[in-house]
Image (cartoon, rainbow, N blue to C red; front, side, top):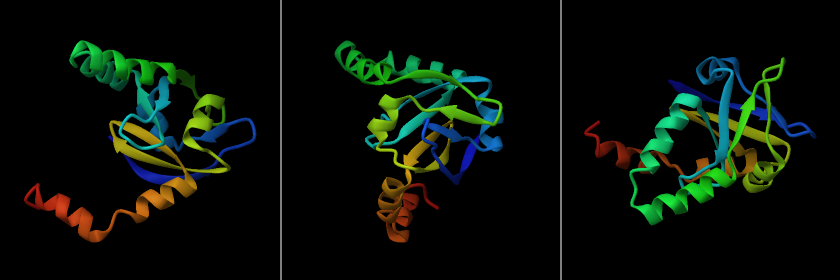
Length: 141
C-alpha cells in the first residue's frame, strides 16, 4: 500500500527522486502517465496496477473505452529508477503537469500522484476539515 506525502525538487533534466518507501512497492519497471481523475497531476503505477487499470478501462463501452485509452496511452511511458532512486519524467508529461522546480509526491494506495508543488498547494487548500468530514460521514465514520 502506497501512502504518505513528500516534497522533492525536479532537476533541469526532468529527474525526480522517488522515496524508498515507494520504490519497493513499484518494482524495477513501472508506468508514468497523465492523471485521469480530473486533476492535472501525473500518476505512477506498478506493472500489476497498470494491468488492472487497463483491464477496468476495457470494460467500458467501446467509444468511452477508446476515448480514455487515447488520452491515457498517448501520455504513458515505461520508466525505471536510476542508481540514485530518481526517475526521468518525459518532457511532455512535465509540460502537461506544469512542473516547475518542486513537486509533491503522494501515495494514493495503489498508485502515486506527482503534483507541481504550487498546484498541490492550491488543491490541498480546497480540502477543508468540513469537506473531508462530510465525505467520511458517507462511510459512517
